[in-house]
Length: 425
Image (cartoon, rainbow, N blue to C red; front, side):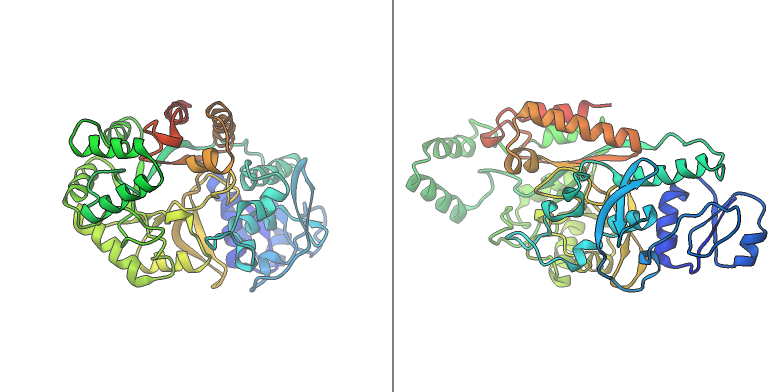
């Protein structure tokens, strides 16, 4: 048993040390009893300012012992050959892990995009070019290797657990079908005014059954689920500027959801309107549960609209146990510095919660619409992200949409990218 001395056993310390040691099956115990620690004859190290003779020490900054969110002067330096965060000129790999895992910088930022989202390009990860690295896992391994080099730990590093988890957001179930008379009439009029004759023809062909709706790729999604475990998140919010799926009352959509739910896990895709609203979120979860006749336990926010801590507190209040929103829209990589499913730490209450966060590595729209990559460039980026997760462990999770895997419109040629992302192993 590895014994670790700290001056104070806080929830922040427990959370961080569990991430470093417990998830890698290294048994450890925290103590603030300096006499017990001093007399302990087996493996131990000191994470405090207190001095113990002939004992390995990592000097901490105050972050894991603070009870509030403080401002720190953040730079970078090396810890055991790995680039790491410095807080007020001191390198602390444990504090670095907690700072990124807890998303501390998002609690204090005033910089947001036009939707009110924290942008990846404003993150410390992007600032130091770490966003495409699972830095928290790299720091955890650096800590363990440091302790091995000092003779504190004799265990070799275990091979990390790895899995692939494709996910889909259903923002618009269909391009042309089941829109209703009024929406179809307005859409047709708009196409006429903009001279979009191709869309007018396609709409007509879909409506009379001569062409499959280009967003109807659900057979492919259902088939994929027989090969890999997947998650699907369905938008059932009221129609609004940013929530544009067909009505949750539509019988064809309800039938489709019910059919798919027999084969795969469907979670809620909380509408843009519901973010910050218990009432709207409850209504949308209730709609999905009524359709599939199952309890809904997982979610991903529409537009990846995540506001901390409010969004996650509301999800917990609605008994959501797993969330898949943790990633950036504007850049690739690992918003939490890991690909491992990890409990959310609520900094506003300074406590560990039971909500499991499932980070994702990339979104289709980030590759095509934000970064303007070609399909071949996208495949290269996906391969690099895959290798990072394979090497350091976790779920290689990513987001596609039903409309983006159909080789239609601006997504022409991107089906091969999707097929590439699920073929890696």
